Image 1 (cartoon, rainbow, N blue to C red):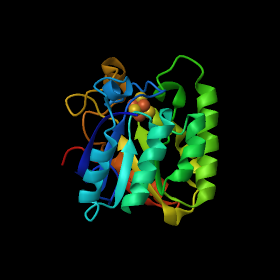
Image 2 (cartoon, protein in one colour; image 1 turned 30 degrees about the vertical axis):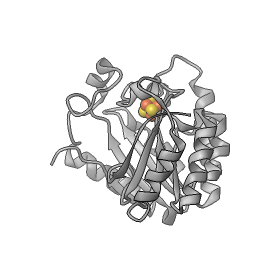
Image 3 (cartoon, protein in one colour; image 1 turned 90 degrees about the vertical axis):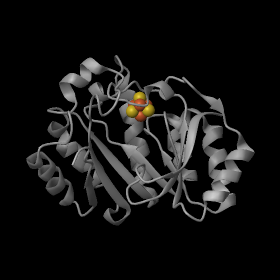
Length: 241
Ligand code: SF4
């Protein structure tokens, strides 16, 4: 069970929640905009010190809303997901899983989470960062999403917005969001940004498709209105004020 570390209090990982956030190592995708690519490539990882972790979660438990496991892609290590879910249950903190929903295991492992966060990465042919074999991954994603929508859990759906690309897939994005009970969903519109705000995996790709800061207000309003029409909570992520 390899992790890149944890942070006992975070205000930025799940909208409106204080989380105890842990980063799992490894990922099956190679998203060009990924800023956690070192962790995704198993760099700087340590074995989870189970007792120490449980002790720290216990100490923080009165002040956090969720134990949030992110990555990397946590479902590459099913034992890590089930272990953290058990620790969360024991300590009495709801468990939140951030998964890309493209692994077969993710379809099973969403069951142990009280809250799930996932990205709608479109166009997946560009955003998955893989040469081919992405259609199968997208089909797995859709299966995972269908199951998640039928489970009635609290969900955070994130839309990583690549400049001039993602908005062309608005109908598909809206079709996916509308599968969920609107009262259970928060949608986060997340403009992909490049250096110096982040350190993306593929700087050349990002120089074409990432923002230098916030979106123009017209574009922000377009996303708010289009997604807001579905009756869900919408937050557009802002990087600079
Ligand atoms: S799924 Fe997440 S962790 Fe994996 S490469 Fe993409 S952005 Fe990075």
